[in-house]
Length: 307
Image 1 (cartoon, one colour):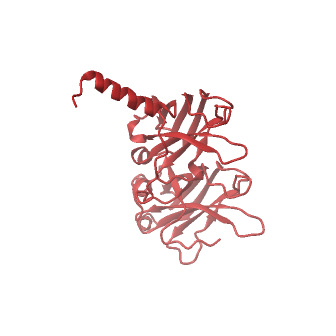
Image 2 (cartoon, rainbow, N blue to C red):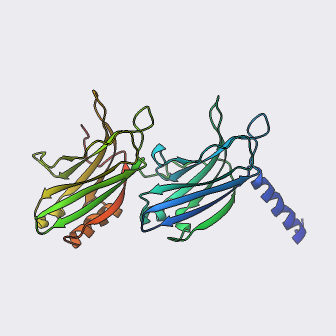
Image 3 (cartoon, rainbow, N blue to C red):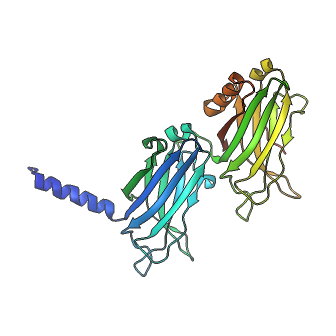
């Protein structure tokens, strides 16, 4: 069978038509490097596949970061009623996004149909590897939606993400000690039935035979984005810092029963990636406060968590 340019054209058109049957989504992405924020502006969709008996849909858009997807990193737009051409013009923002995330992560954007009486139905999705974005430059997309792609669990070596935490470290020569700042958290996993948590943060400097290194922030009520702005001081010789690990855990406070572990992170010489770099930068820059965002996971190596 001979392929002329006309046949090629018809095949290409047919492929495009097949791709367009679920609809197209217009959106733009901006990575604000200085503020560690990823702004996702969901503009509009066109020609969505009808999901309801009336030949229309009640569409909304939800975002996940892969790998490590969890409820904690899900964001969603409002739902628009009875339309196949919704215009959201809504910006959803992830805070605490690091340069490491921008190399490693993929943004999954799903369009779904909200259903009052049954489960919400999936319409289509598109995925953007974040490494396609240049820092501080808005990139616009108009993508055909695709069928649900499987999430390869074997490929996902990362632990489940439970949110982000901003920590500051400073070694004070004057006071001969480490100043640890617990600044804020973002996108924490909800632990309570009301869809929120009552978070507080604990820090330990390990190894810690006498259990004297524990510090605790105040509890913040009903929030997944708490601001703490608390500082803790550890008296320690500069030379000993390289033997220590700072363990930071976030908990959900519950009256009358044991508190729920939300997530944790370890900084120190045995850590890796951003966690190791933050510790090194603190050691290298005495008397300078260094702030970084870190990802909380559902597990910390070598820890027994008891409240």
